[in-house]
Image (cartoon, rainbow, N blue to C red; front, top):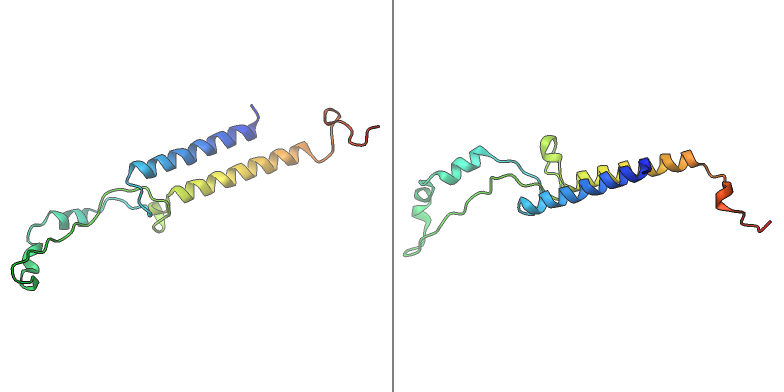
Length: 122
């Protein structure tokens, strides 16, 4: 197997694995990591008491929860560890594949070899 084919195969597997990780973690648009502060806010029961005076008569308003779990996103959410995403993995895969293709083409050269035949029929 040629080195170029190996790089193409590994790049394809990396992209497929990143798409699988994206789907398995909720298919969110941006990468995020677990946030313990948001988890604590979700667990507190007294938040409803803060807004009890603002509720209309006879209606009970339920506060939503903050999503605080890990999600591998399509796009990076910022610098550092949140920069990993499907787009980052795919971008690196494209760069590695392009480099492998270019280096392989450069090694082969542009001169036709004997097994390519003569295009002028002589």
